[in-house]
Image (cartoon, rainbow, N blue to C red; front, side):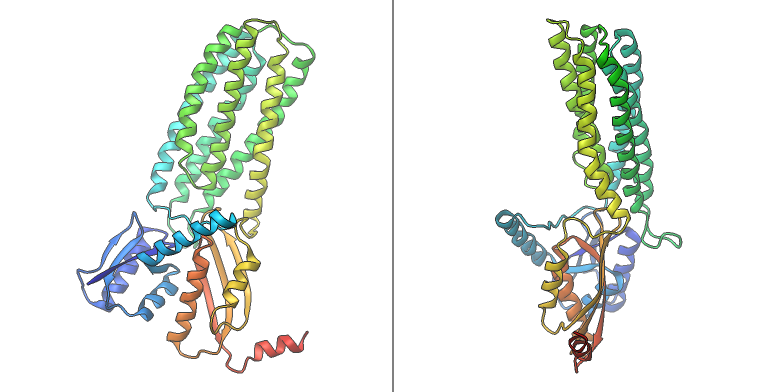
Length: 387
């Protein structure tokens, strides 16, 4: 008889092979051990001891839980979110998603690169400030997407002697660079549009109409490809491309209006509105990414509530060195020290496993827990004496 387990926090195939070998060494060369890297699952004999599971979980920094328990916890938190609009959400990401994300970025890169070059040509031909401004912006988009692709590719590497946590943070770096490009691009568009606002020039609105049609199609495909991503890199690119799509819909509407009027001032006004929208969407994401680089606690984690939930666990007395940070906005990490009145290794491992189950709901996959044996509650008394 076998049981399927989920491995939360699995980083790469090397770690999976290592975990498989550890179970094989303990259980013998058993055919009952079946791993599925794409879904981060392992099938083990039901006779496996809970202590063995907990020990390997702690050593490998993964959470290994029965499949039905994980589904039950996900359902429970889903119900909590519906009723409480909770601060945490658990997401199971297949490890193989990175390759698909890289392919999508490469496709979007070439779409934006070729279109931006054509846009510059047509912007000059049609004398449209909105087209020229957006061409510069789209060319910057293409460069930032290409850079994001390279960072995303690097981020899929496993840990080594130089980067012991792996390269996932490079994805965050790509998002950081892209957000800076967006902010600078938005500011440049505003500055270049103000002189045209004071002296509007006629534009070829029929030509702009057809360019807008092509742009909407290209950006629509790009947004669809990026909307399926979950990394910080993909999210900021999705904002990037969604802004382009909305902007081109507005340009299309402007070209239709100009077919019946001579309100050429709409061209620079539209450029400024698009740029302002860029800044409004990008600045909050830029601030969030900057905080992650500074190792701030992720926004979706309520530290006080999480600490209280851990404190309420049986045999957990005091908590110190309570740290939470994120490598890339998706993979959250945590370390803590707890005191307990339980002495045996098996009992302390059970405490660690109970803490992992609480922490799992907060998308924290890499957890380091130190348990100190303190039956006389010396730490607690010293805290009380110290006020």
